[in-house]
Image (cartoon, rainbow, N blue to C red; front, side, top):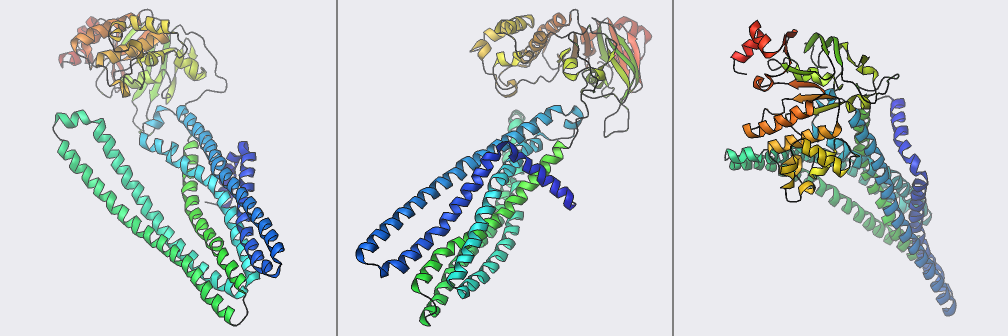
Length: 581
């Protein structure tokens, strides 16, 4: 990375302080104030020891009382400073983390399916939690720790040099060795803790996988096998921990030893200097009081290097994610539409996925009039789902164009385009929460009455009223408390509530039993009435009555017609029917 690029990154990072500039400056002010207090108190002790002995008893008492009050005042200042930088400093970090989390989550919402096709949810989650926490810790503690450490280190060094320069140089020599030792062990600990994070990530991944598939585990009676797999990962974690704790033990014991060594060296050197009269007892006491102010900043600065590495690498990952430009967004001249008629036209549409040179769709031409019911059939991989995913612009065409009511969909505002389209998928996704909240997802500002009407239209009202708290029943993560048919009907209720002019059914009944399929099919037919509807059919028996069936192959639309017309052709469709699909 060039120096200029690094400076630009740091400038961008510093920009997050801007909304909280007052809080940031106040945090630094109290950090300076708190550090200054720790430097002043030993000087007051030295003053008492040097001056009080030469005063009369009454003067000494008054002087001690005044200095005692000053010390109590300084302690209160230190207490207030520490409280401010701990509470408000952390809150500033939390505010910045909040802003960055909003920024990256908002960015996630703009990215297309093509991006998510190549990502793991756990990694995306890590960027929005762990990485941002490391960044906020750096932004809060970094400047504060540097200021406190520099003031304490330089201040203590200046005072100690004035007290006795020979002893100061002895202490400084030990501090240099201490710093070198700390950096070496800190680097080793960093690698060890990185390995720990990798091991715990493996364990978390394994736990998530095992618990998500707990029904499969139990159905095969493989609990013991899962325990064995988990035990191996857990053992690797302990082995990684053992190494990191060995380095940690070496680091902390070494740092404690060096701190004590500085004290011992000061005492021994001080004793020699006392014997030859070049050092006063008061100066030795002052020296010993400053030892902590001399060694603590070294530890802080070493810890800062680790904090900076963690925070800056987290910021690198944050910028890396933010640099991914949304490949699907509004055109500068995009137009708004309130309610579409539902006329769809494909003109010479071809499509290939980003990481694949092979075309999924090739020069597809298709006209669908408002209110048409179109079924898409074909073998797996023929492009049925892809074709339908192009209409709401989950992906953009590689070439050609798709028109909605005569306007290229790339020229229509994305929000407006997707508001015209309702999708009922085979794999229904329901959010953790109540039935009411999940149906209302189709129209967030809908009234309770509108939600209930939509549920009735989807044949869902009766089973909802049998639930423990009817519409306020919590359905669990991904609707785990509901059957497949019930989940599907809630999905259809969402589409009814949205009331779009265009519908896409991705074989919404293929995973259901016969009884549920009948109820859901009835709901779907009711929903499709007077709307432009695309049905992706995996089981051909469900679309025999469709007025228009399109047969997709790798070459595009191979056949088109009703069930009877296509059977008479004795082509691809007839072959699929004979194969039992």
